[in-house]
Image 1: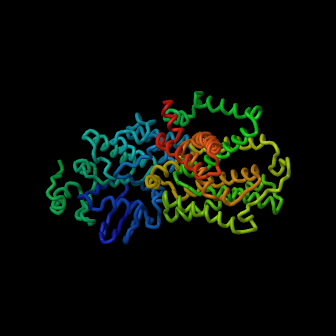
Image 2: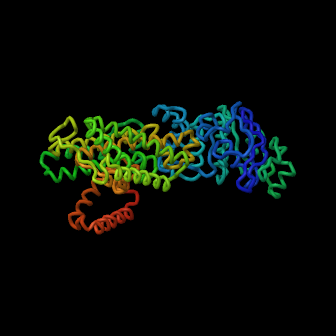
Length: 239
Length: 328
């Protein structure tokens, strides 16, 4: 579904992403992990059109994404969330999701119905009419997810949706992710919460200094020496 | 207010202060010419006109969040286009008003495309709009064919409704009132339309908006075009009311600033902001002039400015949001 070949991104002298190859099949959950600064969010930005690569190819279902703008990529079927929640502060939670729903449904009433359903799906219905800027941070992250889901993506890029959440909240989000997969959406997830991403991903890719240093099933990657070195001894073995 | 918006979303009409209040005021305004004097009517006409202009600006500046300080461009284009067509071709301003509006919309599309395609944001876009307003002002000032610095006097036709001229103030009053209501109705429907939400999303967080599939460039151009179209119509009205236009009064920075000021004071991005701001500032402006005298225009500006600064400090979001919180 998604094919990335030889992806390369430089910022002045800094090489953020180097010769990255990445393949994602429909229905998969691919986890993207790596130490801070490994280039993971940069990869998201490149795929979703917020940054242009210096070299490489990004193909989605056979079509190249390189000539497309970020909003066009969303309309093609790839939606990303942001690491730091970006709600539309002056709008209510429902209206935030409504904005996403409008990309698929032009009529107000129908779009609103879709938005309500999405809020139920992620469990934010209680906040429906509250100003988005005023709900708790954990809920704002959930709202990020809801906005993205409202655009009916085929491929969803989740950027650290679980950062800063309690264990209960993490397991809630995990079950939502599983529901998302069951509804037929492919997922590419960046995450630092190791036990979570290891438990939900089909495959893991590890980035370090912009390069792929390991790829495979969570079990295999967890035992990879290069990966352990990259995290400088950080213990993240599968529980 | 969340309850209000939620009710609008669910399609329920409910009668409350929010609907009864403005309705009563509207009835009062409709009846006003029956007992008010000429000067009061003149004041009200200016209030309505500036509320209308502020509302037109609000679409781009308040809802889409793109600060334009050069709306004089569109105001002047409207005024000059309809006036020149009237003087040279005898075209009735009732049609000239549309020509001017279309021209202004095209100009708005050009300005906004050039600015936003190259990613100009906030302050820089504001500078670009100021630049364009100045360019037009200099053009109008220099080219004799459009009147030069002396401006243009409209041929007096007496009471001639067919060419948008009236002897009495009453017709102007009702037209201005209608324009103010029309612009507010447009904003009302915009607020709950798909594009309205897109504009607000762009204002709140443009990157997030793009990530949800919104073509932000197209939206910003659309907002500019609509805003320009409406503003230009206000310019034509002004020309037909005062029957004299000149470059500084039409294209100058002062016009642009006066439009923006009323909306900011009243509350940008709110439906009643421009109206409240106009009702607050226009009489204030007149009051200062009568006390201090416009002759010493420096003093007038200082007092005006001081009052504005106070308002900004006490009610930073404008009058309307302040009142909303007060009544919550």
